[in-house]
Image 1 (cartoon, rainbow over the protein chains, first blue to last red):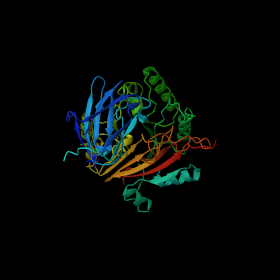
Image 2: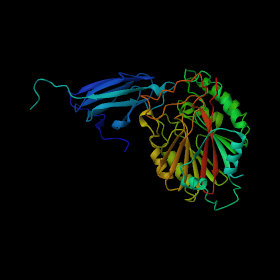
Image 3: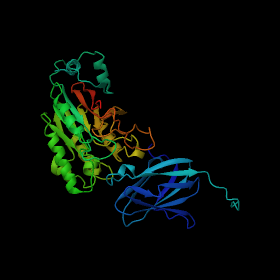
Image 4: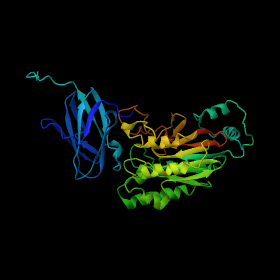
Amino acid sequence: MRFAALFLALLAAAGDPGERVVHVVARRFTYSPDVIELQLGVPVIIELTSADRDHGFSVPDLGIRIDVEPGKTARVRVVPEKLGTFDFHCDVFCGSGHEEMAGRIMVSAPVASGGNSGH
Amino acid sequence: MGSRTRREFLQIAGVGGVVFASGLLEACSRLGGRPDPRPGMADDFYFVQLSDTHWGYKGPANPEATVELPRAVELVNALPQVPDFVVFTGDLTHTTDDDQERRRRMGQVREHLARLRVPTLRLMAGEHDASLDRGAAFQEFFGPLRYSFDHKGVHFIVLDNVSDPKGILGDAQIDWLSRDLKPRPKDAPIVVFTHRPLFDLKPDWDWTTADGTRAIDVLHAWRHVTVFYGHIHQEHHHQTDHIAHHAARSLMFPLPAPGSQPNRAPLPWDPAHPGKGLGLRDVDTDPRQPAYELREIPLARES
């Protein structure tokens, strides 16, 4: 099975108003930022825009794949369910340098809040 | 001439390379000495696979970038027997944003390939040739992006998984594949040429075809299917059930084995062994088994 069920990913998910949003800009041949740090079990909206042309955002190990097109905002909601590092890359050929257009999602253990745990 | 006889002849002639028997059980049996059930061998033939020249590439992965394609042409022309055809499994050129430059590179590749002394040349695109303009320039210079042909009892199919920049085959092509195969007997020898692997070799390096499993599902109903592809710049062999998939080396720079390093950056140039990791292959084909024997021909040379 290509897409391991490590994350819950909902395309164009609105999420809760208080959820963290990570903005990522894709342009030939980089993502900014190219390292996305998440915490286990903490929902995040990854919001992607393109600064130049069509790109893709693919995280095969997490079953995430979305088009990133100029003039549009692509959103994907993720709830990390496993610790580790997961590579992402552009899977829409965008020119000489396309092969280097990549980054990684790093999932770490949640930081203890030290306050109200909600219980 | 039978393939074993030709191979023996090549050995006598000193044409080097690693011999690899395809994963097909029939081929292994034959190499093991099983008698040919249909003697005569008149229809055996061989073809040559070239791949990934990336003509126009400039970079540290190959500081002698203009050497490899002419050298490959020389090697093919020096083979003791003329192959029935040469197939080029994509990325003839390195991509460029400049449409004029793309056409200039394709014109230069065409000039080099015209020096091949072979009866037939079968060309297909890679993403560097075709993804930025959806194959417009490639078709002007080299013809259609997908097609099929028959040769001495083998049905060959060229699939295009590159002209869509998302690296997919698409519904229309899957339908075309189904229609193309439909009249063929289920035991017919089928050979497929693609640029990208149809299976998920390493999806996080984009070494896959997003809808490739759909093509594999269609092909699965035929009992003798073999796929030859490029894209990953190295020899690689894989089975999806009874379907064998064979990747060829590049003629420009080698890429790392899947997952062997953090990214898919080219392997560093070795000045002591120019051309190391580069090469072409020939494929002995016995349509009646069917069976294929692969022979890798290196481009490496001493500096």
